[in-house]
Amino acid sequence: MTAEFTRRDMFKISGLAAAGLGGAALLSACSPSGASSSSAGGETPAASTGTTTVAGHSREGLPSFLAAPEPITDIADTKDFDVVIVGAGASGVPAAITARKAGATVALIQKEATAISQGNTATGILLDTSDEAGVEAVVSRLLKDHQYRGKREQVELWAKNSGEAIRWVLDLATAEGAQVSDTTMKWTAAIKEVNGYPVDYLSIDFGPKPYNTGNGMQVLADYAAAQGVEIFYNTEAKQLVGDAAGVTGVIAEGPDGIVQFNASKGVILATGDYQNDDDMMAYYLPDLANLGRKQMNKTGDGHKMAVWAGGAIEDITHTKMLHDFDGGPGSMADMPFLAVKTDGTRFCDETLGMSLMNNFLRSEADQGDYNQIFDSNYMTAAAEWPGKLFDPEAIKVYMPEEDVEKVGVFEDQIGTYKADTLEELAGKLGITDTAAFVKSVERYNECVAAGKDLDFGKEGKWLTAIDTPPFYGIHRHVRVSAIVSGVNVGPNMEVLAAETGEPIPGLFAIGNTAGNFYGGVDYSMYMPGLSLGRAHTQGYVTGTYVANL
Image (cartoon, rainbow, N blue to C red; front, side, top):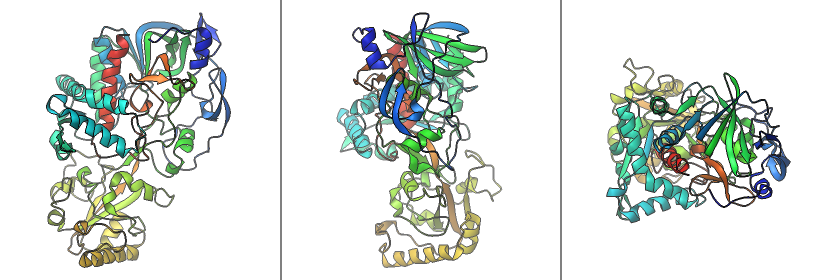
């Protein structure tokens, strides 16, 4: 912990509420009444702003959904631990295991009935075989991709610890029988040199789909329990507990009522993002109102608790991750094939990549839908393109009409089709204006013949004709995979006080509850597996750090 604080200082820094229970002040942190947890677009209410009372004092300009509720006082039971972790996901489970390994008594609180996470790929940098300058070059590249709004210390925490952390996850998950494998060559073989410096990575996948990282975290959660971590499922954190020395615990509601979990060393918030809280989305990312959400029950619980304790959510703009690796092969998602909207019209220079497509597809009519179009010559025409092509036989697993075993895919999300005519293909893809679609293809072929993209200026080497049947189309439906912006944190993942920028003693945030790593408008796809790699790494490092306080 840092220097001693007087009670007066603590009220100023952390915004501790004055109400007490057994001598401890309470930090109000339950979800405000009226907060929504719906998971998709539609009408999204605007969040009002003004003077909002936060954990006992007023703060100008905060949205109303951050107003702290009344403290909970009807505690049915009290449990004492060294470390309390809120959220059993990609960061929380590793944090629990490493904290326990470091000798701490650990409680892992999870509002779901099981560990939860999404995605498959996690990546780290191997320091022993990478040039030190190359590691720093990767950090600089990631900061550049996010408009230099992230903190270098945060990206370096990942860069300098991730190889060890991801190797640990791989080895432990393998030993415990999870479906996990080394996929380095698949994901990071193309970025092994940065600014002339060699960089080596370790990429892992939990899978194949539909098995994912959530399944892997369930296996590791069972391991954590066997090591002595006490896991409380179906238990929702409602508010933080604090006194003059800082945050000292969490009040949560479980099957047996309200329980106060005391934490002598620290509370780690690992509750994920806020994509299912409509008020938060309307305030921070209003342009996503018409785009669906891939996850459920991610309602910003940790963000709110941290703010009610005196912390602050990082400044707008928040970084959004929107993609679809399931309609067709993920390795072909960024290939610059002709792209058309549902109305059949071309809309961009396709080299921008899938992660940015959402910026053209935010309307109520579009709702994140678009189509990649190519013909039967694609294996030759795109042979030198970045990514990995699936040949006509391999791509069948993504095609609902093909009678093959659908291995490694989410069968309800695949959307790849082929047809002998463009008109037939339009019908299968759900394109609403067939004539406009045929015209778009004809116009594109004119550009190919001219060797110039006369409409969007795409470089000529990416122009390939669409004139030889069968014709192929991949229907991509980009939705919100994650919001990767959170509360302001320091170099050891400690939550920082809004008014002073100093650490709030005893309070930490990791994974998508923590901010300051990204900062751009859109998540960069430069580094595959960065989001989960960051989560695993922060959990791995922070669990040990807090246990040793």
